[in-house]
Picture 1 (cartoon, helix red, strand yellow):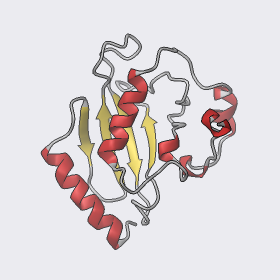
Picture 2 (cartoon, one colour):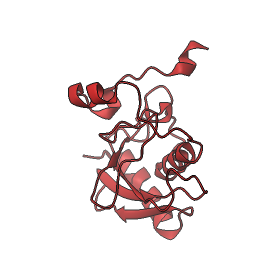
Picture 3 (cartoon, rainbow, N blue to C red):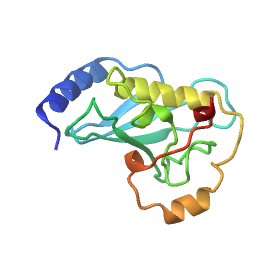
Length: 155
């Protein structure tokens, strides 16, 4: 259940989203302040994602926007999970922006969608993350509880 601050923030975000969203992002449903569905499309000519639309599910904790939302791709008959080196076949996304370390309360639903669009736009590898099958088979954690290792952590 969204806390007062989260509900207030999400109410503002929803008003803005309903009035205008960047191209390639569409609100599907936002019946409450716990879970929203949005569709995104890649707008450039990346052949990996041409003519595809992807469904994102956002889940908000009562501490949003202090804590990041839980964001995953959802597989539907007409909405595949994009093949990308940072997207597992179960829809879990490995992106520092969605983790505790990379998240900032300045971010919002729209900026997350735009970041994911950009991540897809820049991809040229038609592959899943290393260890995808084992990860999908063995993972019991919620996406926000997974501690991904980011290669740029070495720097």
